[in-house]
Length: 566
Image (cartoon, rainbow, N blue to C red; front, side, top):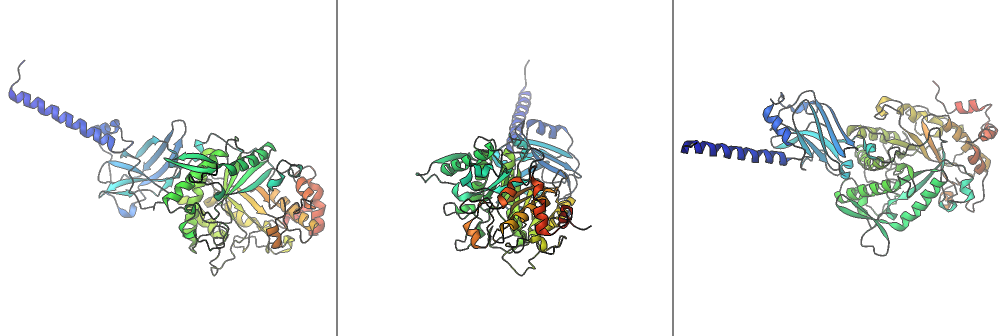
């Protein structure tokens, strides 16, 4: 068969067109991760989904549902997005964008994670990376050459799905626990307390090391392309403690504290780096890349190390201390409650996602002190606990509700008052103070739908610090504890009661608070045996002690004093 010149030209032109189409096709596929050849062919073959003109005032109304989740079996991060209407844009794609904790909500300068052809329902999957735990994601369109979000930034909804350790505590555990004295580890003194829970502090400055420190042995941890260093000496000390507690059948709660850190000031928020401020602990850094990445690595490292039992096991975690006291216990130089709550919630979710990705059953708490509504706005040194509780909940829901838990320190007012039952107690949400006598102040709020976790359940509530001084008399201290424990044990919403403390602290004693079961010389106080027996078969033996001190006719009457009158 012979071809004319015209025929040869037509064949050559067709071949060139096919080659150009193949190049353009390959370029389109490679342009954004998550775009497949099948999708391009689908776009070519199928009629595009009907779209409507984009209207600014309806920006966040086009999407009916948006969810981001981890799928452990496939090792994928999954995006699921359903539209009520699909808005028009520069092209025929929906883009999925990711933002770091330290990036502003409106900062969409990073490359998209993936894109999908527009449809009424979109499903996308990308390979999982650990750093994805800490990003918030949005669905967006390209309009005028810029990304326009169609959803609020949301975090992945199920970090616990990544965990190898289920970590669920047995049902019907005693609520009794204590701030332990590490000196008594492995001794009859600690064993005789019959405690179910123990709590201990973990200040970050002793753990986070540097490559430059050649004299200190370190454990290396690789994360997101960087190597981080953790002090092996302190890790070994905590390993020994946590393993010892686990061997005794005691469940550990760890409190993460951001103390002053001269080696790693980047762990502290820019508004917290004041060396002259007489604060105990400082707000975590959520504003700067270097500090946030170090926090992410630290959270992942500690969660991983203390989740599988090899180094001991932490069952519950508390992030920071009494966060409404922002000038003393979680220092940040601001009186803006919205900004403060938003900042803390970001750092809390960072730790939460890291912990849950390693231990699915762990509870992660933040704590408030007993100041509930006392501040009328005239004192810039602290926030009301209720204000921070409500604002934290709002921030959490804005970026995707999750199963955070709350811890309280319902000390009497003043702290040295032991016969706390003699005070008048406001049982409403407007109470000035939150004490053991008006727990309904917070439990009534936790029962409301707006405060429930994603499963629709009431959140875990724990008392992680509370104690009574023996300076007013050892029997009075013992009765105060016994009555308090009975109140807690009869309250279905409180999961733990961690007494402050096993052994008297000289610092606290100087402030009039001898809170321990043991004196500083480790001699026993009257409260020691009461604590040991209160949740056992002899627990009711102390009812008469309570009634004599309280001058009540029955335990039913005594317990009714701490109940809200309907």
